[in-house]
Each structure stands twice: as structure tokens, then as C-alpha cells.
Image (cartoon, rainbow, N blue to C red):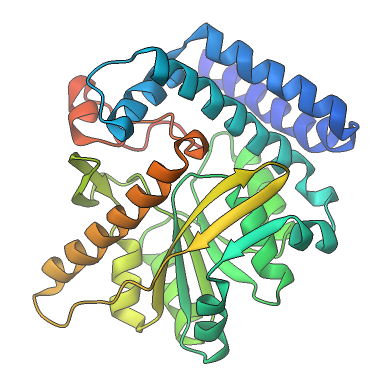
Length: 308
């Protein structure tokens, strides 16, 4: 019963976000969301504590100190900004989306799409990837993505409707079925965008990530090998009122090795690119869940706990 009530309350909260927050004057909404971020940080709950453990890995620290605490507060403000913008994005027009985006290296993606080769964009939980997706759509390149199943079903439906309203094709996270449809989109010269800095399946590839073992999904490597589409890591951050992103160099699929070896090599290279982006902008990496194998093994919880 408690779980059902919690799910219902969550659904109501998100419904209010896409109705009340969406129509609230933006300056007032920003004040409220910053206050919520600071309150959540001060409560120092499980998510914030995990965030700080993650930041220790990024900063190379063995324990949380004042520097980590200050940084975690910045992350929470960035994270709540993301949610405020999610609720308000349907109100933003093309001029605002494009005018407030600063994207480095986008020409590589456009070239892959215009040549009908197809492009896979692999992202971490950084900045505002919803706004980045809307930017790509407004440049004439709608894309396919995958959404994690959420409870209750009505909440999942809200997220799908939100992303579809921005011009995205959204597939449920259902393994082979979703993979096959993404592969078909890529073979037709389209784009696929996936957030892949933590494994939701417990079957991901083990990689070295900030000096320790983490698991990341193999799906982007598998799609690149299956379709020949170009695989680009993308990292994102905030620059004042602007959304910023960097399209990193394409990750080539090795010609040597068996399928497992090539998958691991590509995923490891992806982890390295994510490291560079996160290290440059740690305040905009919104990772409040477990990423590293050691952390997950400590209490037996799966990698996919929690959702964004």
C-alpha cells in the first residue's frame, strides 16, 4: 500500500510540474527550485550521500571533505535546474532552444546524418540532454531514444508524451525489441541518442572509470558494430543561461578481436571521453545513483536503482 501511495504521489508531483511549474513566471520558479535544491542538499539524504561518494571518485579523494560538500551543493542546484527546465521546455520555442545552445563539434554529427551513415550519440547524465535533444530536432534531425520503465505506468506515459512533444521517438527499455528498432533507424541514416553512464541491466561492460571498475551499457558499441553508424560521445554542461555541449571525436570500432573484445574496447573508450567531460564540469554531472561495482557490491543493490 505504501508503495502504491508513493507512486501515486510521484505521478501527481510530475503532473503539477508539467502544468503549474510550466506556467509559473520563470524568475519565481527559479527561486523556488534553487531553494528546493538547497533544502534537499541540507537534508543530506541517501541520494546526496551517494552523489558525494561519486564526486570523491571524480576528484580523487578518499573521503568527503569541505570541497566535496561545496561541489555537491552546486550539483544539486544544477540538477534542480534541469528539472525546472524539463517542466518548462514545452513552452520554449525554436529560437530560444537554438539561441541559448552552444554546441561544439556538431558538424561531425550533421555530416554523418547527411551522408545517411547514421549517428549514435552517447551521453552521460550531464547538463540538460532534453534541451540538447530539442536542439537536434530543431536542426531537422529527429531521433530515437529509449526510456526506462517507471512506476506507475501513468508516470512513464507522461515522460514519453513529454519527449515525443519535443520531436523524439521514444522506445520502452525492452532489450532486443528496442535494439532492433534502433538498428533499423540507424541503417536508414537516422540518429539514436542514449544516456549510458550507468548500467540498468546488470549485464553491462566493466570499464575503468576514474580509477575504479564501473559497469556501462554495451548497447552503443553493439549498435555501432551492427550498423556501421558513427558513434559520438557527447558531454553537456551549463554556461550561465546557456546550454553547452561538446561532441567528441568519433569512436571507431576496432577491426581486430572478437565481438566481446571489440565491445569492451569501444565502451572503455566511451568511458574515457565521459571522464574528460565530467572532470571538466563536475558540477553538472547529476549522478545520485551507484555507478561503481564496489559501491553496488557493498549493499547488494543493482546498478539501476533510482531514475532520472
